[in-house]
Length: 184
Image (cartoon, rainbow, N blue to C red; front, side, top):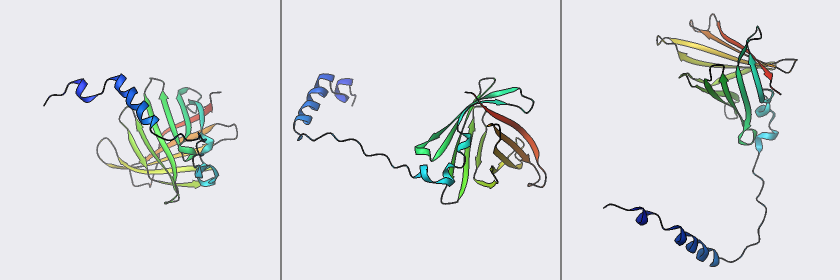
């Protein structure tokens, strides 16, 4: 059976009339302010430990050349951080970072416009530096290990340092090094 638009969606005047009848049939209630949304992460120091990375950033290489722009914002009541990355060619990527209270560690899921997807399921803190770890495969389909570090610096910048290992973590090669400097 074919349906026309009139069969599926009531006319706008009919919707208004129906809403008026339904609203009129309910007893009037006093308007009350909505209850404050729960925010358990705001007071949890483990979940706030990466907050030094939140902000709007100009991203540079170690020699001071521009690499891109990033906005890192708290989400879900402060329970996570969402990075919105843009490189100099306009390519974008996003990472979702959150402390997993069940596993007692931070985790990151990254997806980039050029097709990269990395899932950092493990992490540990070394002083004030967060070190993520992941397992992946390279372009040839061989297993690789990834390490990603975030380190707050005395000048207010944040160092992001990526490494890759093709020998099960025996040796590491730098894949990139960025310095996040506040844009404002």
